[in-house]
Image (tube, rainbow, N blue to C red):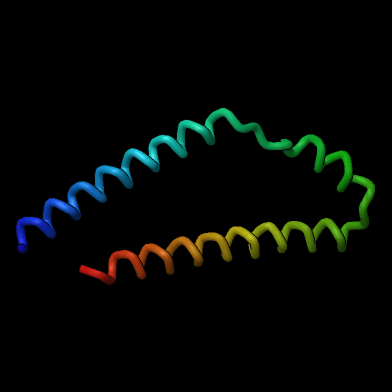
Length: 79
């Protein structure tokens, strides 16, 4: 029974690697809007709004990183 469970884990791990590699391959084909478009829009804004944008970037990045770490810890906790 233990051997079968181990084989299932190895199989799931291989599928997870394959899926992540496919997602990375697809993501390489997508192009972001780029900062040049944002730069033109933010130059006309007051300095206080520009500072708020910079803070929002850190907030959004920190939230994404926290969700990633929390998800990783939840997945790794099963062991």
